[in-house]
Length: 256
Length: 256
DNA sequence: CTCAATTGGCATCCGTGAGATACTATCTCA
DNA sequence: TGAGATAGTATCTCACGGATGCCAATTGAG
Image (cartoon, rainbow over all chains, first blue to last red; front, side, top):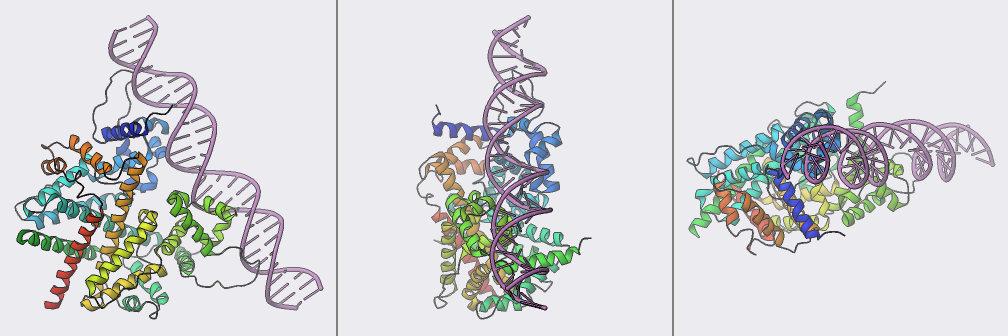
């Protein structure tokens, strides 16, 4: 006889949330544990930082810890939960944001810090998206941005929208950068040659008849010039664009 | 003796690009092929639409086609390339965008159409990001947006930035929506109850001491009110914000 | 017309990963 | 001190991606 699926799901959610938030377990009887959640996800994080996501499999984590892989299921429940826990650990505590310099400076601090997180843990941006923030660190970052937006007069709905938008942008931009970087190093090209290769290969395929504007783009020197190099410029372009959008939203809210 | 890795990589890239763009093969001798790339990725796409990304494995595609899985390697080269090919097929041809109504209307058409693509193929947004657009359809979408931006006076660098930003936004927003939806249906909750659950569970964990603003957020009714329901509103919020940012960029470019 | 080169398709094998079950080892509380 | 609870292990299943090698079919050159 199976229990009510709703009950089951709720219990499951609670269990993973309990682990995420490090709520103490109930009993102290029985054989004492040789490991704990933090050691498990800590070594998993080290492996992921060193070997990428492929290095953070349950067998490999278990081997690094000197136990069998099935032991880990006492601590993480499933592979997906391991990734969830790793995410929150990797994000780390949010930056201290000074609210004195205005919301825009605060947002820039947040974005810069968030970007550095993805630089430190390149695998993080490539995880499958697992819904809204749930872990303590993720909520901390959420809180930090909400603090930066405190004086803007936006309502909660708008603030959540901004949070989603910016978080998503930093994530995808970091992921794409990482993708390009590892594409480069796999082939063994130097810094800018990969983009040049991309531009050159596509320039041959993109016919002006079918793709008038795209053909002009690939015929231009955007992918060849060193200006476009250092995708950092491209990243900041998007940031400023979004911040400008927020700005008009704020003024519209104040005047409207 | 291994060949030069650079040569090898270049040949490999060319082969996959050739398949992506359906360039004709060289020879006509030997046993004629019983399959072709389009049939393979077509059934793979059907399986993915029906069963999600988990349904589009090489063995399952082979079974659906009535061949063994190793036959497919004559057509797709690897699992990653299969996903690449599927992506471009799923994206499909870009929408016809009328340039008469101004860039903003054109962008909205593009965004709406792109969003519908992700609705039709929910797995598409969950694919690992594989660099800038390379396939013929992807280039077509690129071209369509560039056409919509033709009269704006932006330079190529800015247009590419806008392209990245908007494409990434639609993608992640769709992915998150899908994530929420399938989380709902797995547990068996109705439309809005999942978000309510999220808000309630987090409200218990988020202490005002540690997370002052986030605590206020979860104490508010944002996740409970039907206003926030239908993430469509949230999606359009982000769209308008980005479009406003583009607007200020355009006027700044014109006046500057 | 024939045969060899060329190409498509299949059987078999391997390594890896996630996960389930059933078992043993160890500790704490009564 | 023993009984129940908890930690860790041994072993199994299943699925996936990928490599190798063989056979079959077909076609073009002589």
